[in-house]
Length: 197
Image (tube, rainbow, N blue to C red; front, side, top):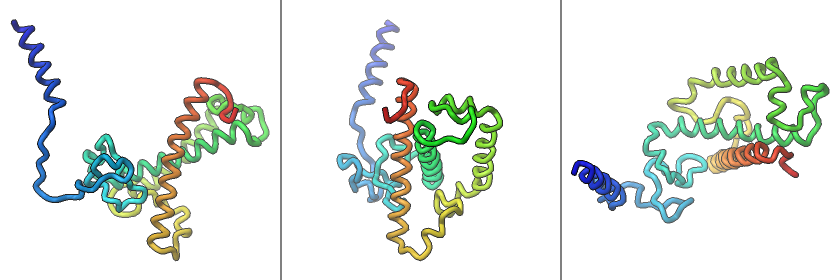
């Protein structure tokens, strides 16, 4: 009898997960607007279009649990910039000229990491650590996400629309590079051949 009760309770729990829930709305919000990226879904409340590249794409609802979207944008830009450098480095490693020396001649990017040795890898690690440490306090609070003081002179004298366009272009390229480096990594690890054939 106890086993039957447990099975019935489990079935009721599973069925209730698929039951439609009543929407409770105490105020009128921007949830009535539809997402630009997925027009059949409502735009999340925090994604109001004020950030560059915001097209209301959040099918998992991560913006609802993220307290500070500026911190999330910092993370997205940082990972996107790293991905842009990584995909350029991966293509360069396979096809373009290298520094002289046996440790720089590996055409497989994953083999190259071990060929340069501890000293080369430590230089990269310490450089990234210094940049990260210098910008650590910028991740929270006011300020523009991604602004580490490099290249900001390119935005001087531009209108707000031009600045927003430049920031949208950067975040779009960041997102594309994250997809590209993921695909390139998977392709290299599966086939162990150069990316471009």
